[in-house]
Length: 207
Image (cartoon, rainbow, N blue to C red; front, side, top):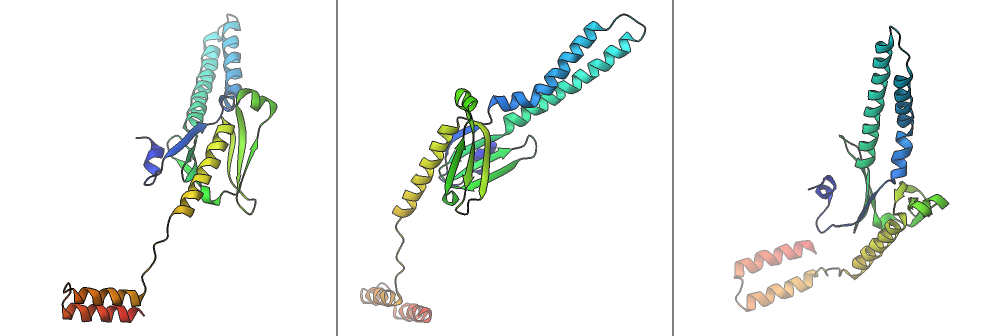
């Protein structure tokens, strides 16, 4: 069972899951790639002299640090996920310690999607979730499949609203109705005189 599945409530299900676009990861590791390229060229281009080994070792250490940094960037990108359930929008991030931001579908008033020309070409974009006060409660920045995610979010919100409207509100019986039902039970012999008096007093106290 995944981490998010453990956070789901009863009868809550995931409608759609996505993450940040791979371009985000590429932007994060671009500097490390340049450093590695410089390290490789530097090691190969060092002329023969007494301190060559020391210089190669230093460049190699820089390369190892760049690789470790790239690995951490990849893990951060991989661990950051976005989910649409039939109740809320979930933004989960963190490698070892987790941070989870929830946005209830009932609080969502507007959904703004922004896609550049490249975003439309490569399938990424940014979604801003607004409340009735136009406050941004969640920012889904440069995510993959933003159109599908927006559609899933709006469909889940509409479904939740329909379910909320259709759910009947249980009528609370009045004290008079309870007294009438109690009298009928006594007439049928289903409660004793003592039980009848005790229940009648309890009902009268509520009035």
